[in-house]
Length: 448
Image 1 (cartoon, rainbow, N blue to C red):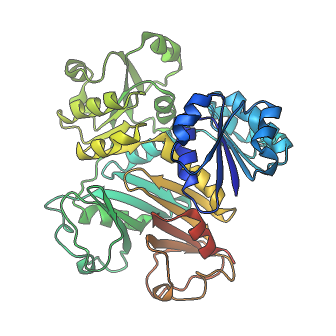
Image 2: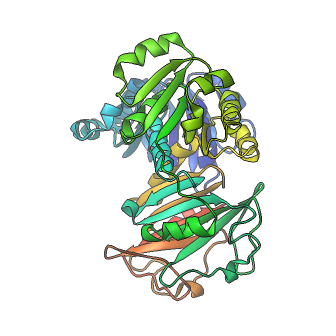
Image 3: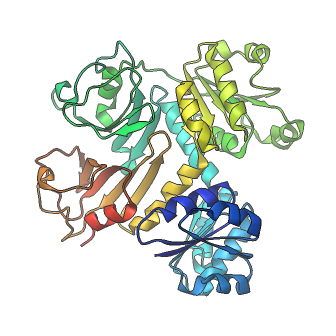
């Protein structure tokens, strides 16, 4: 597959570099800044092209006429839309544009964009806001992903001494009758482990489970986590992500929004709902945290554009005994540091966007792909086609690539976990957890 990524900003770089590691992918990163392209491409298995993605001549010179997928992630949403329309006019069937206006995601725009050549839109800030709200509903988890319309969940939980599973081998876990879950991976320090029966859980592990929605409380219990209802959230940084998260959240939650820039405060002051109190200041300031009532809050969220600021703010909040911290970390190099400092949940727009793109690589039979920032892994919902290698055999008899775990499935609308005796049937929707596995390998398993 030939892919052009237009826009060599942080998200464009991340996408192009990740896609270049996939089998059978011919990647070109296009941007007007030739100097930046030269630095990015050094030592990488991808092409670069210095040109304007909204210029028809430059697109043609870049090879757009033989391209299968065109992704435009420049900072200007209107430039992205125009670039996709031009690419489609040159014959590209799959186009995706990054936008920053949430209204463009509405159904009233869908037909207009599709007919104009923009086949799909991505708004990373919207997806990040959805992740934040999922965690607000489940603050005991490091990661919580609702799959197949909420029927199955993938949950990442940090386990500590005193929890039921620490010190036990996977084979020793016992659960009440009909309460079933799978342990699909363990993140231990910098290593992601696909566990076997003899794998032992250790203090500090982040354990990833798949479970039916009705059984999630059992996962929480064996991990020793308490159920907390979020009533008050302190949020630092009045970014687009913050405003989208507030808009999506329950109106029963009281948000305290702290913003340092007076100009931004004036922009948003009159647009905030009644459950938000706006403060001017620095969320790292302990006096201000006391003033805004951090002692009565359950969650602290740092959403500035500065990774160091977000980490420091979360550390300041943790000194007050806050139950949950969430930090936006766009600098991938800081993510391991944030983990070591026990920042609760990490939000990264690059990995959120990457998951959306991987869905296109897996084809039309894929509903969802989510990239897990802290585990260097992905989870996907994929439909098994009649005649596919994964169909018709017991799971224990399948030769799955190393790094793949089948976490659950939905058959005829009924969700269930998968075990060694399960036989995948045509049109089953299967939850696939994969670490260090190329999308092409997954696609081959599920296609005839």
